[in-house]
Amino acid sequence: MRLLVLTVTVVLGLTTAAAAESVLVFGATGHTGSRIVKHLVTGGHDVTAFVRPTSSRSRLTGYAVSYAVGDVNEPATVETAFAQAEPDIVIAVMQSRRGQPSPHGEPEVRLVELAEKAGADQFIYLSSVGAGPDTPAQRALYPDINYDLFAKGLAEKGLVEDALRASSVAFTIIRSGSILVEFGREPPPGTGRGYFTEDQTVTGPITYDDLAILMVRCVGTSGCYGKTYHATDDTLWPEYNHWRCRRFAPLNQLDEACDHLRPIGQVVIERVN
Image 1: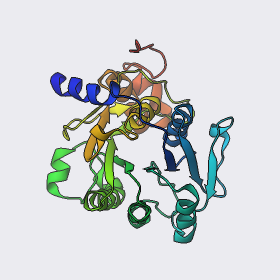
Image 2: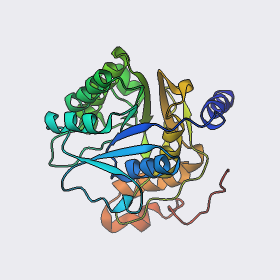
Image 3: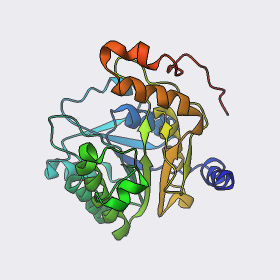
Image 4: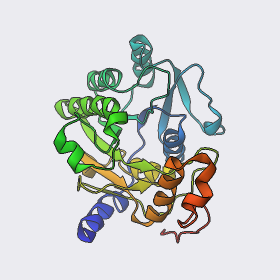
């Protein structure tokens, strides 16, 4: 495993910086998307953020970003965004919201089709570990996933992955397992130890910061073309176990049930530059 991780680190961390690109980002105002946009702008890329009319843009304040307003479930607004941005690279990091139509499945498949039509050079897609149809084999491979709750969304993301592999656009699929965040708390900072691996059996937690940095390193990087990566950080398992405990413990028993595990934010993890 260590040999594989070192190989992936070389590919993502030591390549020559990509030339400036026109990048269209879907999900740009979320935790992951906003971090990606900031790194792209800092790196000199021309960024267009596709945002819903009601989306807060506060996370992108102070950054030179163009905006395309619409909804991925309204195809005409998406077509307008592509015409406006003329993207070299498309990045989709959207998250579903309770009570609203899913952005995954057919809406994202349309993004792939439009990227292909526009002649985009690369499509980077944030998927999920376990993406694809709900089968006994999938459940056996990823026993920690609650398929009874997430099967629909995972199936939708599987459709998008299939569309990318069948398209003529160079794709990079990044699957995340768990991103550490707890309601009412700020997300923990990056550790500098997150990595991508092509080993599809490797799953685990990662921070928003590290996920965004790793994804941006794939922008315009030919070594990432045609790859499906799993994103993880081996140093976060103590925090992840505490997070899972607090997520599923009764509210009135959080401290009692989880005080034997290391809480998020109370331990400083050594950074790697």
